[in-house]
Image (cartoon, rainbow, N blue to C red; front, side, top):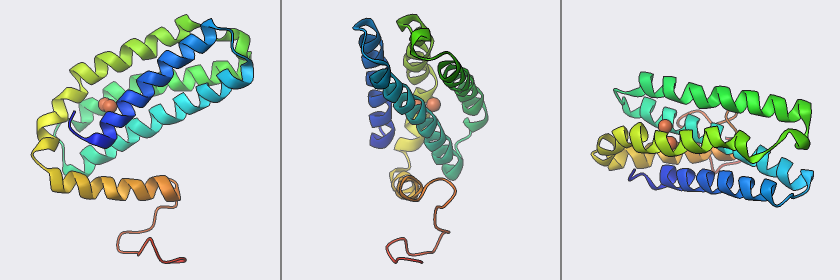
Length: 156
Ligand SMILES: [Fe+2]
Ligand SMILES: [Fe+2]
């Protein structure tokens, strides 16, 4: 899509879904599968928020409908995580990952692709917004320093 941080997310998450399916097929232990499930769910949610915040900051006109599209996968993550927690590893099988796998590939090709030219025309703003995103990652979503604070000064 031209934004390296988002492209990395797309590739990493697709890779984890594929790896998780393989791990299930190979009968990996519940601990391994469980940590992959947590990683996958966290990274999906982080990526969707990152994309939405970037669109919001840059005033992307397609944000509202993009949010609606994301809501479908967020709903899947919530249900998947709840069921996995409730039912345990035996509940997990490769077919349960067909939905996110297909959703992810289709969403990138048909919905994410729509922001490509918008972001490509604003490289400076994208870089600046992603810089702030990194602070969200470091400080956590609720503890990001206010704008103007120097993030490199302890206690700032
Ligand atoms: Fe995306
Ligand atoms: Fe998206």
